[in-house]
Length: 130
Image 1 (spheres, rainbow, N blue to C red):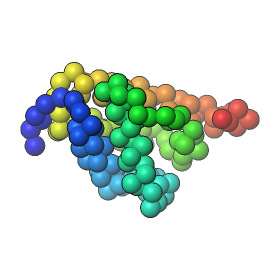
Image 2: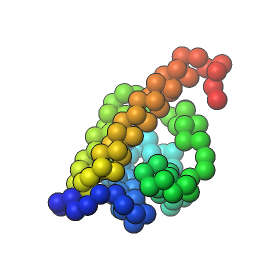
Image 3: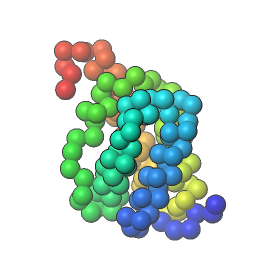
């Protein structure tokens, strides 16, 4: 599939999120972690991710929440974050091209770095947990 255009609408966000999480669910490294945590609540999770990325990339403020706390206790290591980023970037590159696509990859990288460092911090400082 050749990227056609930039991320410009909620329809584009939904395509990105749906494609990305289909790949996550099937992934041998990430699938077990996500499927164990989310279980049968995938529709709810996807709706939340649509709102999150719509807010972040399109500046249409539909997300209300704190993204880190649900991730604080996940059994993940550096390899999980590296795989998440690899799948995310590949999905963007296959579906989109342009400034917002580049921004999405940049923001995903920053979020992965922050989440990974915070998870390590909380593991090493359990009294400071959220």
